[in-house]
Image (tube, rainbow, N blue to C red; front, side, top):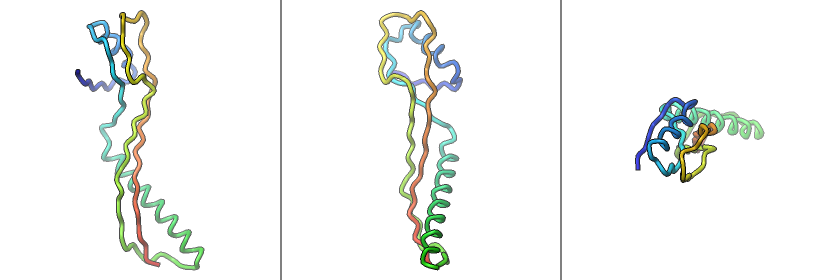
Length: 119
């Protein structure tokens, strides 16, 4: 078993065809990833904090209060979901006659925080 990193997304089908032609008889999955994970993770955390602040301000305003400051922040981890529209396991009996197509995938990075504010 081998793992290949390939960055030319428009030519993934050609890569798979070449692998099959070279003798590969099973491809387990096509996975999408990003080399900018840490950057996107920080963006997700910033958005989570802004969302927490907006909600706290709305709740405080309902009671005629304003936020004075942050008492505590807890990060609950970052979720990294890969959504690829490719088959999970494909076995090849013969070399395909046409170019293999791989549908684009999607990466979702989300962060969760708990913030305690002083009113």
